[in-house]
Image (spheres, rainbow, N blue to C red):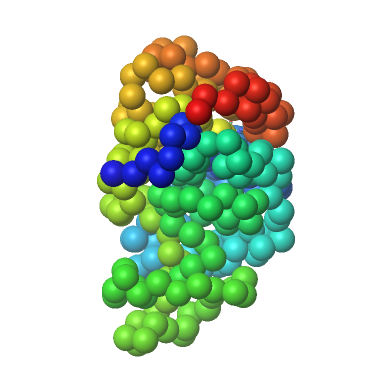
Length: 238
Ligand code: APR
């Protein structure tokens, strides 16, 4: 369980591809999103890796290159600045490192990290990568091909349990830029205490009955986070 370090309230920010859209990184399911141009089964499953590792590496090399070229936007920065007033946990579905580069100190990646690679025989052998391309023939210390440190469709989500524990201690829960369709991650919102305030910042359409006390700020991440930041810091509940 997350221990309370002080009497500050705990904000959990759960982010998806939409928080990085204004940094120039494509979402998955918007029109012209990544899944319009690639088939999930061809690049983001263990079977794809078995069948055509070169194509999988190329797909993630492109993601890594774009991530390295991108900069955090104002939504990432405001989420980091919330730490001046609150205990903040960021739980992200994103594989980019823009939250960290914006200054957030407590970031959990549910779906892996593009700036890391790992052994394909031992998931605990994880290495940072500081170049954009990972190639066939690059091996871990046990001699097996390195793969992107990504949770593919059909693989377990090892950080889920930790994420649930964090969400259960939230005083405020904020979702930024996620279609909330990919499980188990999308189910996190249901672990938040029932009566706490919940906000969803996303320009898309959502059912009004997702969960209790959910306020939909139907705006882009930068604009919506600005509005919410002002609201949350005007009346800091300490
Ligand atoms: N600001 C905020 N939200 C935005 C913006 C923006 N500028 N632009 C688009 N969005 C919203 C869309 O309305 C949509 O609801 O971002 C959301 C993106 O949804 P998805 O593309 O489905 O991304 P995400 O929810 O992160 O996907 C979850 O699916 O493909 C897998 O593993 C991948 O982690 C990813 C998971």
